Amino acid sequence: MIFDAKRVYLIARKDFFFTRKQFILVPSTITAFGLFIGMLAGKSMHLTNDFFLGFFGGILYLSGLILTSSTFKDRHNSNSIHNWLMLPASTFEKFLVRFLFSTAGIIIGSALTCWICSLLTGIANAILYKQSLTFFNPFRISVWHMVQAYLALQPLFFLGAAWFRKNHFLKTILTLFILQIFLSLVSGGLGYMFLYRFLKGNFNSLAADFFLSHRIMDGRILAASLRILLQGIIPVSCWAAAYFRLKEAEVKDGV
Image (cartoon, rainbow, N blue to C red):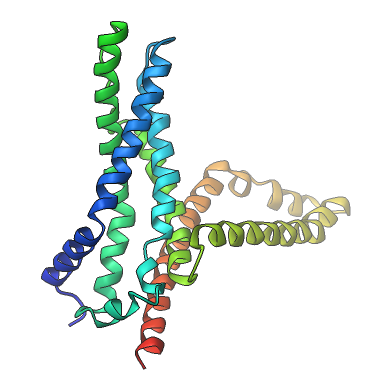
């Protein structure tokens, strides 16, 4: 049986039990750091929700992507790979637990950590500087925009976690950097070969209407196409590639 909700729950409970120290230490450290920064900033200005919005973005992107990059760390560790292979669950169930942790778990955890930090900072500043309480609002539209951006980046680092054996975060960033340079060169070359040379030459009104048509040049169509690509095609492709990478690795290691 590929999927069983009870097994998924037991896997999630097992992961939490073995990483419970990190679940407590990481949010506590971030909260303490945010409290310290908030108290320093509160000495010279009144903290607004935008301050905590930026703090939430830092938690979500930096901590979230680093944690996502180490999602399958035990899968690549020679000391723990036996436990991974012998776990009585399907590859999809193990994949699903780590997927939910690196998406919904990190998003909710970041929002909760930021809200607790804003509460403690607000109380401290109210006592020290007589300021009114300001709480982080996780339901603002700007928060949702940050979450959308994270969900567009997360699949890339999730795939890197499944693909690379060591230094997952750094190798993923390096791969993205090289890929960006390659795509820039390719797109620049194609743009010069077709568009620039075409516009430089003689073209009739029909060709001009084709390239300059509002339907082709409409920014809304371009924005919608990019959204489908960045928030649909690429994330799903990365998640699927990560799953099949784990599936392939389990077959090879299990033989």
